[in-house]
Length: 283
Ligand code: ATR
Image (cartoon, rainbow, N blue to C red):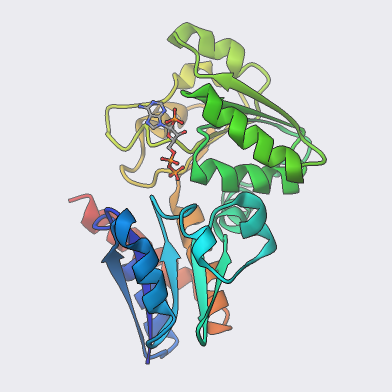
């Protein structure tokens, strides 16, 4: 049988094992999907070990998505452009990196939020690994304008630099987080979609911005899926369309499953298992 895993540091919180094992079991595939904590200093050794043994592939999460890139033999077009890998396919002793976060975001925003980014104005909060994949997807979907808002402006500028290599459509701008709550209304004035890719909101009492500053008619997506809802989504819900991070998690996982198995992923089974695991992990 083949082995699959998600690696990260820390990794205790991951609900990918429950979701992927349910998918494997439902199709009768005899494979085991586990979580493995890999410290940054051990990443190269771990990747070397993937070349031997019975591995089908791995998922890669924080903080390894960028660090793993130079350790692989080849990259998909998206992974190379985004500069981050969340899925590795092991083919004999060769390792190929993919990024299914971008397609996961694209499918979630279209199918679950009913939002088409083409020609729309987006406010992207954050400039880390997740923001990279979301920005790639927004440019590919032909968003009109994306304002990247981040606490650290240098990081937002470096994302802008990366994006200018593959973007030939959207107008891209960077900005710092507004320093007062009152300034958010100006930042968000023309915005059709707000996407939170920062970790602000993992603690129930935190929110990255005042929902009251988001204009009527906008959609709000929070990549965080636990707590459900985050404070940002709870405050947006009465007036705005909202979507949490679970659909993106499921779709990135489904795309990874398809890369490893060559089979169509049982997306409904994965949704149910992910929902169950989310409830269990929030207790
Ligand atoms: P990921 O790969 O999940 O995107 P990351 O690369 O560590 O994770 O990025 C985390 C993002 O959350 C960054 O945009 C970070 O802002 P900085 O670039 O300024 O560090 C943002 N973030 C984390 N904690 C934050 C906080 N307390 N306030 C504002 N932004 C925060």
